[in-house]
Image (cartoon, rainbow, N blue to C red; front, side, top):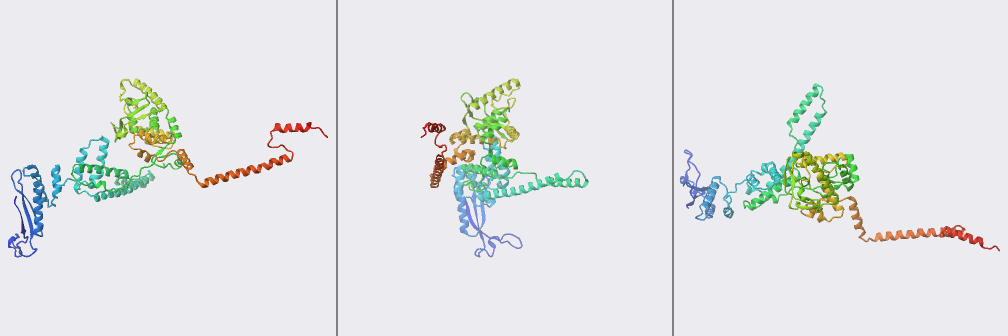
Length: 552
């Protein structure tokens, strides 16, 4: 196809305003004119002509280089490849019209061969929408992705081109989130202070009523209470973006994932702490928990189970406390997977909460599918619960909802996980025990198993962890007496010289003390007293013998 380079003078006639072109008297002057290129492109489907045109080159060499670049792009499509030819022609026409940089030849070849858009004009927002629409996961996970995209990713980086997204852009995004957190904290503090002030203003009196009205107006003008975007949420936002960009790499839309290289604040997961007597005392004085994750001692766990012994869902609390099922797993456990004759149950489903709605789902992870062994006491508890459930079924008659679940509402319908949590918190508060979450009851089961000397692999499998490292990371702290026993056993393994010397000194002191007591026995004997090393019977026999001795 035709293409050429040419010089162009942009000088205009001061009278007519027209370009002088070749009539410009300065045309022959060095560096006065610029160079331009024009390359014919394949005609459109309707037969109309189109071309690639660009000017402003300072030298003929620069203009010729771009013309060769355009021709190389046109040569990427085979002569009989009408679709490829049309795609490249449309791309060059768009690049010419927008005065955008020419795309790289090899990158264009890769995109053409993989069936991608030749122009990387796809924005981050457009890609995220396309990616989310193609996800086939459970509803709760999909909603979490949608929230990250709607609340954080689209507002901050959605208008950027996907192929031009950089690590610096993501660093700026997370800095903006931290700045927004600081503003939210300040706004919440101002609103709380205004509400507290309003509570102190009396109702009676014209002056007080005016003051209350002014404070209420100020509160209405303030932003509502908002939650900050914490470290865990920021990590999830990063994970969402990283997963979507990995899929974009898999589809060869981009070649680099900036989300894999941006650094943000790490999440420090709280460690499980046991409610020792000292911590309980401090909690009673201040009302503060030492850690978000607290675990009861065996005595406290027993006290709670005794307190809720008559509760309708006692069997659930018992099962979670001893076998460590998750809340959703306990709510969704079917009788068909609970074999009391073989003392085992199989965790194969769960109830998950999405907002306030609930749905049945598979276990949280592949390792969540597991067989959990049951002890005799737990089996007896479940048998009694099954009998009681049978009585409820007869009482409700045709109104009974047959779900097949072990733990249900009074009419047999699903238990709502959120309501189960609320009930547990009320029972704990009524018991007077230090507070724990329902999930902490599961933590307690793990701690009890570790305290009983159960192998870490068995504990991990019982809890449904994918790796024993997860179990170790969460339950580094165990019950105090277990830790002390381990410390004593460890200390005895090390032979220290000072220990040996201390034992010798103690033995020497004991011998010296026995030596002091010996003269006292001899003194008693010298005084004619009872010898300390003779029994009473021996002393009486000696006296009789002395009396029988004839006098001289």
